Amino acid sequence: MDYKTARKFLISQVNVSEENSKTFLSHLKQGKAPIPGQVTNILLALKIVFDGLHGTSNLDRELVYALHLLSFDSRLAFEIGEKTNVPWPPLLKEDINRICRAVRNIFAGVWKGED
Image (cartoon, rainbow, N blue to C red):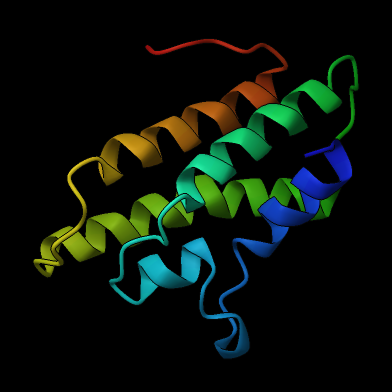
């Protein structure tokens, strides 16, 4: 996956329109688990985007908005699901934490591991 593909993939994963109901964020908002491999692909795309932006001081608005939705709205949808007893996969909370860390790393311009 190259930067352009990774960027496009991340932006597509926050689309919640009915015609695109298999996106990561759409699934979470519907109280459904992500599609197998989806989180892995998101984490890979986030790392590729981080690498592609290395040394860049500006980020484009469309990408920033997608990253914000990936980190903020996915956590919010997860927490709402928890409160309504959605049977989330056992590692989904940790996966969302990894997504949030990767987004923070992109914004910071420094890749840090686990906190």
